[in-house]
Each structure stands twice: as structure tokens, then as C-alpha cells.
Image (cartoon, rainbow, N blue to C red):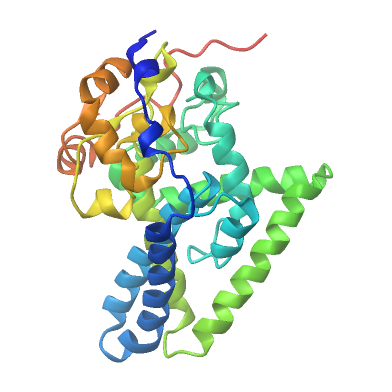
Length: 309
């Protein structure tokens, strides 16, 4: 395992108090969302849907910041700020709990213990019906992940949570109840504007589809846990929309560092990070699209997986 990443001093990048820039961005995101709902339908419903999609993706990125302790050091304040679910479909509490479990790097890509893994146990894969394997292969391309990924992910996510609720997990039930209240408030706001609910829902789906671009190749199968996490050296609109989480190895090694500090931390220690993840990097999202739009990056069955005892 590489060691240089342990020598990186990220102290100067760690927040000391309220992150006013992040707080302002959250408020701007909500403000723009309301303006889009209220004003853009009179101009173009297509533009309305696209803008709602971009804002939903940005809100998802801000939700990711909140669960990692930004902009406040107080968890309840952060959760209250992101209470309105602009993506409509994912409860904040469930995203928080599954994502923090995902941050146990030694379990990254584990078909069972990493909640965000897209890999399957080879033994389970071998028993799947052919139609399902074909569907998962399509979902394993970038185009498939963007078009089908939000729907397939939602079905799997809700099925697993339903099983947890049936087994008596009150925390999961609480998170869904709170989410329903948030969705109700979002719908109430939308109904007071000219935006039809179908446009709101389609915009939310587009937002989740945009997020799937980021998550598509964040992690690969590799024996060394740090070498599983990617860097995409992109500084364009997608990197901004993802709040620099394309520099993913930096985030996984320093999950408390806020989004705006990731680029300078990466640039100051670029060689150490690329050594830590053994060169798992791409120059831009343009390169990612060119390589994987119509083909998978990895096999669906985990190539290094051996069944648990």
C-alpha cells in the first residue's frame, strides 16, 4: 500500500468556523430553484426542466457536503439547511447513512458491504436470469447509467429499505417519513408556480442522471483500497456542478476537507495522490465520455471477489 498520502498536511484546508461561501451557495441554489419554477415556464418548459435538473444535481452535491460537516460544525443545522429534497427521490438520512458507510475505504466496491458498489457477487451473477444480466450490462455503460441508472438505483434502494422497515428498523422508517414531509413541501411550493409537476419530476430525474456521471467510475476493483478511487482532472462545468468531487481520491483521504479546498490541495500534492491511487486518473470528463459512453469500464461481477465464509 502506498504511504505518501499519510504525509500530506491538509490542516490549512480544514474549516475553522462557519463556511460562509458554502452557506451562500446553498441559499443561491434554493433561490434560483424558486425563480426557475416561477419565471422560466413562461419562456420555455424545456429550459425549465434543464435548469431544474442542473439545480437538483447541485443540491445533491451540497447535500454531500452537509453530511460531511459543512457549512456548519453542527449536524442538525446542516440537515435543516438541506431539508428540501430537490432531487425528490432520495431521503437525506438514508443518503447520509449509506454514504458514510461507503467511506470505509477497506470495503470499497464490496458487493455487500459497500452500499454504493455497482459490482455483483460472481456467484449471484451466475444465477441471474439472462434479461437481468443484459440490463445490468447496459447500465454498466455511461449512457446506460445516465438513462437507466436513476430508475434502477431507486428500485434497488427502495426494495432494500422496505426490507429494513419490515424487519423493524425505525431509523429507516423515520428517514422516509421526514423525506415525505420534505417532498410535500417541495410539491406545495411547485404548485404555487406555473411549473407543472411532470416538469419538476423530470428535472429531478435529470439531476440524478447528472450525478450518475460523477459516480460512474469513481471506484474500480483493486487489491489496494486507495488504488480503487479515481481522480478526474477536470475544471469545467461538471467539476463545478459536482463541487470538485471529481478529485475523488482527495475527498476519500480527507473527507472533512470542504469542496472549495480540494483543487489546491490536489495541485499542491498531485504526485502523492497519483502514487496513492496508482495512477487511476483521467484528464477530463470528455475523455470519460469518449471511452465509456457505449461500453462498460468494468465487468459487472466483481473480478477480485471471493465469496465470504
